[in-house]
Image 1 (spheres, rainbow, N blue to C red):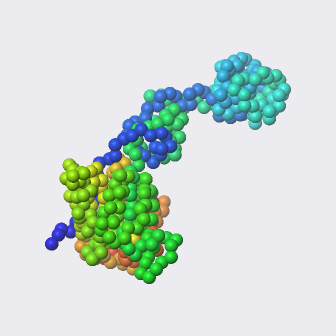
Image 2 (tube, rainbow, N blue to C red):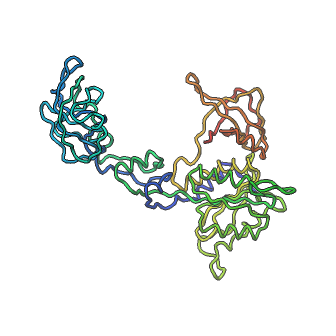
Length: 446
């Protein structure tokens, strides 16, 4: 009798066989969602110069000290400074320069008075001045009355106040989201070295499967698995490729898998891994030696002899398969065909494999403790680790533990209940009953 594997044993065997993808250099937008493999050092100060955070007037502190509505400071306006200006005028005693947001602080100026704290100035109108877009200072005449004083560097973004040169902008291991891409662009990095997002090929098997949108014939069902698994792969950070459902024919499946190897860092199948007469995944992939053969039919070095199919002490998701196939030893995970079984198996095994390929830590989802809500106890088959679907409620401010409510039953076909769930309730192998109010382990999902 073959061995029954635990969930942890199966996952550890998968992770032992997977190596992170080789780093590559990508342009910033192409690197979104990828993991940095080296620290990024700030090459220059950000911002690179003192600049105004307001539309207003660049002034000297002494010239506006004690200014008020009743006794305003009257300053001569010597020019306009827009963002990107060069050849800045020097602000001397009794003078001010009209300045726009983001424009460099001119020599001599120590702070910026917002335009709202002034009369708007005379000469060229304040509205015209605030709309100026010139890259150089403009000649200006007239005066401005300042109604409030300022302190040094008020309304000024100091050079290096965001990041200083030589400091670490982003650490190796950082996943590049929109904010991280923005920071890299701001410090002048056009490309970075990352581990690429893995390419995950998803296919489902079954002659009864029909694509959504097409009419069903007798005994047919719509193919949900390839869609839920493709969506899950994308959510995990992969670049997914969905292959249409493959009929229950071992030669067709073997040919399809072989064709997909060229674009796959990881293959995922669903269905055909149990003990039925038409479980073609087992039939096709148990004779996988041709995938690793050269032109003369000889087995190439490092190619896998077969995919190993296992029974796991879990529910749902008892039948599983894993192996390394083809000349590049591409990982393949074969999942059960019932929709809930397939999705739970993805969360437990495929998602960690995707994160391992990307070099992300941790590979497993974090777990939390929660009180079982409701009035009915949960039952679980002894000797099997059960993963029930649930809705998790985080703890309130005055509580340490949240709660979780089961959704639907334990049936592996109940995809409607799966769509309502946002967590998995993890019931250990040796636990057969859980009373309401007891603490359970919960795996929150995205």
